[in-house]
Image (tube, rainbow, N blue to C red; front, side, top):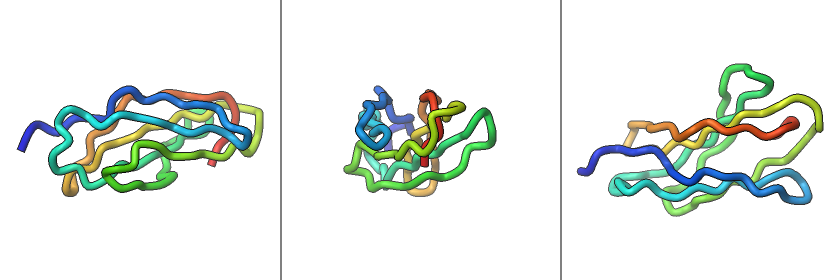
Length: 95
């Protein structure tokens, strides 16, 4: 198997109800079983927001409040091993 790598090109596009997070599969995509998406509110600990299969490269989040800040992290899951991508943030609160 190739080395395990994090997802790349992680961006968010605003939608009417919040945002959709998009990413690209890493070059070393053999063995990816899925992706996990985590959220941190106002600098707190990261918590699981959701999981998608290895073919899905986007995840919608709903904005619940305009105050504060949320950070997001998308990780590639390789048969039990997880490799986190870069953390990025959006203003407001999301779920």
